[in-house]
Length: 218
Image (tube, rainbow, N blue to C red; front, side):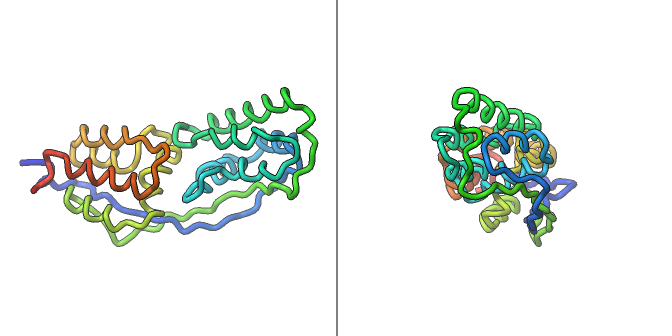
């Protein structure tokens, strides 16, 4: 019996997010104040501004704000280069943010106290996972649901899951390996290079790998 015919004991439940934003206590008017707030803000704020903000955007919130700060050319690009997909913990992310900003201030101390055009308000995302009317117990059901999944849900399960679960994997690969025993397909999905790929292109790569699996029924 192939893995296509095998039925998982636990189905894959597809989710989407209902999101709300709450303003936290910290705000920053200068790069030096930003550095101080990065040391004391909540993990939820780091996640919100580094990961949640990237759904459909090319820059994290810190990099976007610094484009309006005076005399700090180059720092926005350095922060934008911190790719949230390669972090397994929020603490690692916070450490690199602090290291990048503090290193820049050592090299360009005059940038530290120059006021930005508007303050940076630290926020926290309030997220409620909402189950969709989509589940899968077989590979065929799984593939069919991925085709119709919203971009937000696809991003949640395949891109954001890396930071959220603190594992260098995604929800799809985890279920394929544990639910259907398809370790090889799970590994190939984990190896998809997300650099410079649109979300649509990533989805197509996932579907192509599933179609190429020898366990898929013709």
